[in-house]
Length: 433
Image 1 (cartoon, helix red, strand yellow):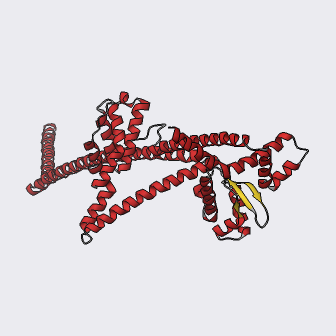
Image 2 (cartoon, rainbow, N blue to C red):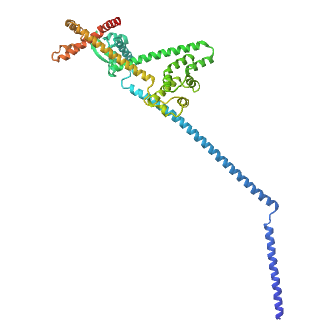
Image 3 (cartoon, helix red, strand yellow):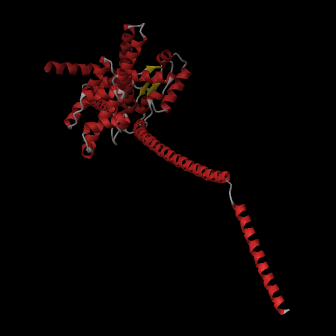
């Protein structure tokens, strides 16, 4: 029994082991079948991976191109912005310099009242006073009757008084003497500054009128040459505006001749063809070229500009004119017109000073030859009411009475004696020379 039991146990153990091995083998085969891919499934997987790789590559390329374009546009935008900023700064500096000069000029001329601001009847009366001052060669007019002024202005007496009051209040003139009544009169006096401003305005207006007439005549001739040709008219007008017609161009070069010669003396040999380039190629207005040449000359003489220029002065000047269209006006520069007006003011002041000195000397000589009777007759005949009160007031100091009498005699002398006496002395000088 023991032997059989042992044999059965071995049999069952072997059978159990075989079953286990069979089960393991079956599970392994099923697992392999389950994980095995079909041929078309493998192809789909491969193609999908390739497609994903291609899409990723395209995306990277597009991103790189987009970044490159963005960088290029940013660089170009920055370049344009810098260029515009530089041009804006250049224009701003030029305008600032020009406006500063104009503002300085206005400030200097604004110290005294400007006669150009007077209009209407006030202007008409002021110019009438100015005209009479010139005729009498004095800052004071001869007696102007109320009747004469009313007739000249075509207004009523009360309106005349208001006009005179306003002009006096604005300090354009003063009433130096007057006489009331039906045959009343007034003497007006201009200050030296107002008189000189009116002289300058008269000369400037005269010059502008002559130039305007010259331009009008030139245009009329140009239009008369070919009235049916719009092309010729356009060309002629363009030439006149840019200074390129033969007449205007020659006149322009004559005007800048002095500046070109002065620059040559400083070693800057700007020639006519250089200026012609600026007129034609760069299209700069002739007036701007004239001022720029003058300003460049001033900069060289007053500020030693040539020492700070590291290249040829002609190239330096032409480069500025081509880029900025004008030479920046240096500090302290005065235009030709400003210098001309200052010189004219100096001449007029000297002329007035000399004339007053001559008047004083001739008056003294005239008074010395007057008899006491003639002296008294002139004073009694030409004194006004205020002077009469002063002369007859015995409580006043004697020197005040004498000054009043002298003023009466001077007024009479300036009105009736001076011109004749001056002409006599001029004749004597001409004969002796």
